[in-house]
Amino acid sequence: MKKLLLFICYIFVNGLLFAQITITDADMPSVNDTVRLSTTVNIQGLDPTLTGTNFSWNFSTLLPNAQRIDTFFSVASTPLAYQVFFNNFIFYPNHNASFALRGIDIGIPQVPITEVFNYIKKSSSAYDNVGFGSKINGIPSSTQNIPVDREYEFPMNYNNNHTSNSEFGITVPTFGHYGQSLERIDTVDGWGSLTLPNGTYNVLRVKSILNKIDTTFIDLAGFGFTTSRPEEIEYKWLAAGKGGPILKIVTVAGNVTLIEYQDDFVVGIKEVNKINNVTLFPNPTKNHLIIDFNAGISGNLKIKLKDVLGKEVSTLYSKKVLFGNNKLAIDLTQHAIKTGIYFVEFLLDNKGYYTQKIVVTE
Image (cartoon, rainbow, N blue to C red):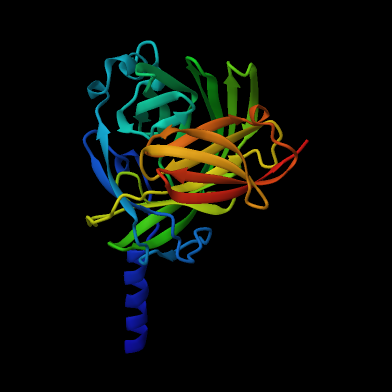
């Protein structure tokens, strides 16, 4: 009888501890919230695809190689030029944002797109990314997502799912046009407990499949093209009252490109001087190549093309890039590249080599 009572108590306690939760808009960020995020790309052999009901995820061994603090700004505190499109419930009610978050600068050859603010609209039914503001060649510009990118629907429970489609486009003086369409397929595919280096949380797990198509037109070259990106998947764990995912793992074509988690601890991390998270597409390619990558610092970047014997064939790029995510569009026809197998080599401020293979076809 005593063993039975102990067993019942064990089930009761653990049932309460790992009970399925519901996520609502109250669990999302609000103006003036701050979140410390630790980041890494080392998955340490863990499998982010595993999930289920009353599931226990253990990511306690994660070690950060960088940290940042995200601040959620009031829309009224962001540049006035952006508020015309994101703080205007009369003309743009679907894009009337609740707050803004600093984003990553975008790298396009010869055209710096800087001081990026992402705008979010939060309501009792949804959490929408409505667009972003940025400076293009120093001039403020606003870019709306039309339709908006719906990241979450509320209330959020296990087995919920939704699909949304969004697009944006940027006209860049002296460059041309860059745009992107996005299909988001969201499924709440698990619930249970998540253990991070700083504690254990009751969570819902959301799997987001992102299908992106880039559209680029280069004025000087007089041509444009569309490119389907490799499939991107976001695995996100959300806990009550934590203001967004407490853990997010991003994979591209099955490879982990980002791990970030909410952290209570400040760690001493030196700036990383290298290139990582590189995506080359299309691959195989013929006339053009999009290079998407993350730079550990701002600095002078050289991208060289070498043949299978290690002989340099051409310098594809030699200019300064900014810290964070960068995107380059390379016209291979200007480099007289023959059909074959090549290696793209990156060198940032004479440090941080990174090499990746591409195939050039007829």
